[in-house]
Structure formats: C-alpha cells, structure tokens
Image 1 (cartoon, rainbow, N blue to C red):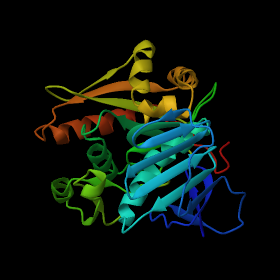
Image 2 (image 1 turned 60 degrees about the horizontal axis):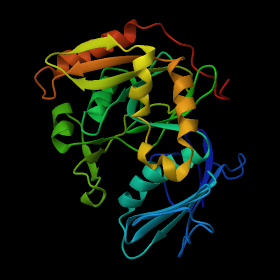
Image 3 (image 1 turned 180 degrees about the vertical axis):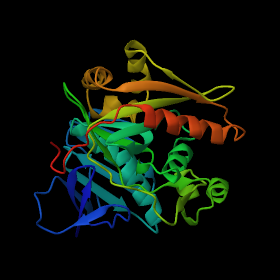
Image 4 (image 1 turned 90 degrees about the horizontal axis):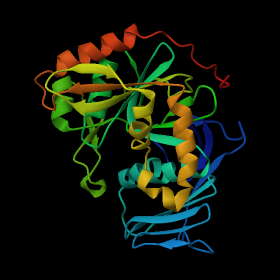
Length: 309
C-alpha cells in the first residue's frame, strides 16, 4: 500500500493516485483507507435504494458502471470493486470525484465544484455549472503566473472564522483544442468511459494544494463583454449552495441543514463576485486580463502555516 496526503488527510491506498503527494509509511496516523476488494457489500440497514446506489447511516454504495463499484463508510474507508478490465483513469476519476465528495460530506467537510488558483495566500475559486470554462480559466490564470490549486473541486473546513481550503490532486483536464491554443502538451485522454472528451495535461501546472486560509469566489456567468461585480451576502448563499459538489446526493449522505449552516457560515467570511464574459473566445484574453488585474488588486491574505495555524 502507498501513503498519500490528500486535501489535508493522510491516506493509505491500494490504488496508485498519480497526482497526489506521497508520504512515508508511518509518518502520521491514517485518516482514510482505500482498499480494492472483490465484494464491497451493502449497508446493514439501508434507508434508500436506487438503481445505482444504496445508502445507509454514514454508509454509501454506488455503481458508476456495472463493472465498477464504490463503498464509502464513516468518512474513513473507501472500498473499490472492479470486474473485468476497468480503465485506471475511470477508477481515478470517480475515486477523487464522487467517492471523495461522499467521504468529505461524511466527515463534515464541504466540497465545492470549482477550479481554483492562489495568489498571496488567498484561493480564488472559479465556480459555475458544467461547461462554463472553469478549467480553461484556471489554466489561463496559471499561465499568467498564479499558482494552480485544483481542477474541478476544492475542499473546505468551515467554522465561525475563516475557512481552511485544500485542493484535490486530480490533474488538469482540458479539451484538446484548448490545450493546442495554450501551446501545451496533451497527455492521456480522460476517456469516454467517464463522459468526457478532454485530455489531461502532460506537464503538470499545479502548485501547492494547501492549506490556505482565505477564499474569494467568482461565479461564472454569460455576458456580452467581460465584467466583474460583487455579489451581496444574501445572494451569495444560493450561489454557493448550488456549487456544493454532489449537492443532489445530500439526502443520501448527510442532513441538508448541516450544509445550510456551513454555507451560511462561509458567506460571512469570504468575498463573492460575478464574472461575466462571452462564451466564445472573442474576448477571452480581455476577460483573463480583467480577472488577473482584479485578483491582484484585492488585499493580500496571510497563508496558513504548514500545520494549519
């Protein structure tokens, strides 16, 4: 088994996790164990059953495909079963996607669906619905000198004061034509098996994945030209709640009111803006220029020390 540090958690895994930082065995207590097993089983007292999932108390089983299953229990164990020749990239995509989101919710953490960069100790998250260009914008910002934190998901520890923010080591996924536009080198395809025609970048752009102690969120939107406007605290709540990763799974994983309280606490400690721009590439460079200028104009924040203080 290998040992990793993923989003602040010490992980022991049967599965190689290519973008995660390895740690030495026995360097710290284990928070999460990932095992490959023949049979993941089912919850002892299931409360919800669906075509592809079974949920019990802090115990979720789901099947992304007939050949691949995950069981996430108590925020501490992930069991994976594979039948036949399941592509490794498919296992990775769901392990650090849906399975990790379930694990975070079971642990009381808050995963947000966004890509993110960092500058002067602050994380700048780009949130929005699927296909709004979160990964493309984050990559463009990284090429302008900002530090890439995470593609697709960040994980928050929330509380009465500032949040603690971690990236997830998922690799950067972009459309092949976007990779070519940026002059970057394409790597392995993400694969149609996970519903994507994107490819991973061959040469990683990721910087440190955290922890960070300050967060700014940009909600991506359509507009005739690039524009950045602040979102009020009242309007920030629904915007952020819709960005909770695997929000529709909450009835299977944890009480929705717990997430309401987390998001309510979060909106009082962060800044949220609307970033509108055309969906085509006609004003893309102008939009990136505006975003970089805005990020660098905001007051710097002191980043957390390595022990999270």
